Every structure is written in C-alpha cells, then in structure tokens.
Length: 209
Image 1: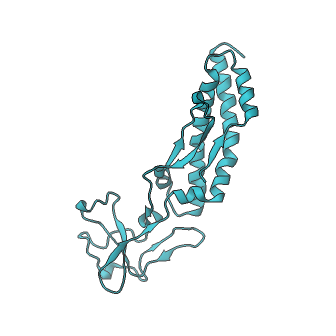
Image 2: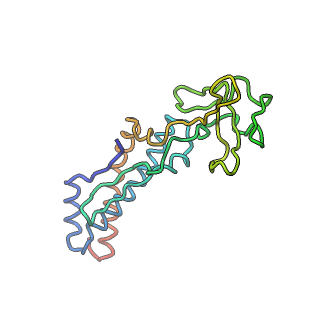
Image 3: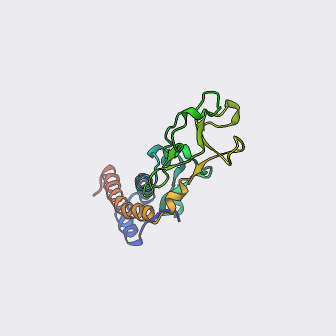
C-alpha cells in the first residue's frame, strides 16, 4: 500500500551505457537520484494528504520516512513508508478548538467549556465536529504525555471515567488512493530529471561527455 518508485529497465540501460567508463558510476548516480526523488515523494505525500486531512505539514513529516535505495546491492527502488513507532495521533493534532487547557491544574472547569463542546477536524470533506462532553487538559508531568495538552471526553454523564481521544495516524494518508497516485505520478518524472542531471555532472567530473 505504500508508494514505491521502481526504475524502469529502459532507463536503467540508458544510464548504464553513458556511465560504462566510470568505476561504480552507475551505482553512485542511481542511488543519489533515487534518494533525492524519494525526498520529493515525502513532500508530495504530505501535501496531498493535507488536502484530505486536517493536519499540519510538520505532523505528517514526523511520521514519514524514506525507503532508502541500495543500488550497489541491486535494489533500484525508493519510496515512502511510515516509521515503525508511528501510532494513532492525538486528536489535538486535528486542530482542536479551543486548544487551551481548561485548567492549569488539570481539573475541567465547566464555565470555560465552549457551547456544544470543543471542535476538531479529521477530514476536510466533513468539516469540524464537536465533542459535547470533551475538554482539553494538561496532564501532570509524571503521566508520560510529552506532546502537551490532551483532548479527553467523559464516557458518560458522570465525571469519571474519561478517555483520551485520538484520530487516524499518518499511515492512513498513504493508504489513500488519491495520495498514492499523486506521489507516483510526480515521482517518475522527478527521478528521470535527477538521473539526467547527476549523469551529466559525473561525466563532467571525469572529463567525459
């Protein structure tokens, strides 16, 4: 499901012929070009994903990684994947409003809750939604929360129990057909430009044409 870029055999043969006189020239150019093309794939995935989800660019980038090419080992591919430690995102990442904790002591203050509850937006197509019994608090420093304020909701009418609210992780972005098509659509053109540019550069350094 993750966007992968694989070099086509025809282009591989073309580059190989041009660099045949340079030791390890083919591996150098392929690995460099694939790596740079995959960086562009990261940007494309983030940009297209943010057209669908209410996330910020830095949030998406934090969980994406480049699949490194290893041309010297015969792996002529690159791509975009999600980091192993990526999990569902705190709903705070989806633009919770108001985002300020209701109390500096972590105790909800009903007088400061907005009418209808705080709102958030996961999918831009469905707009903002409210959580009637939701509230934002700053967990105690010993609670293991390193990302700042957290969005909670009561499970019932009583004050307790409460649950932490989360939204889809970045993996959901890469599973979207719209994102995969956008990433792959730009990747091959970007790769070919990088191959031509890096091939010419290496030939010049060796005094060849």
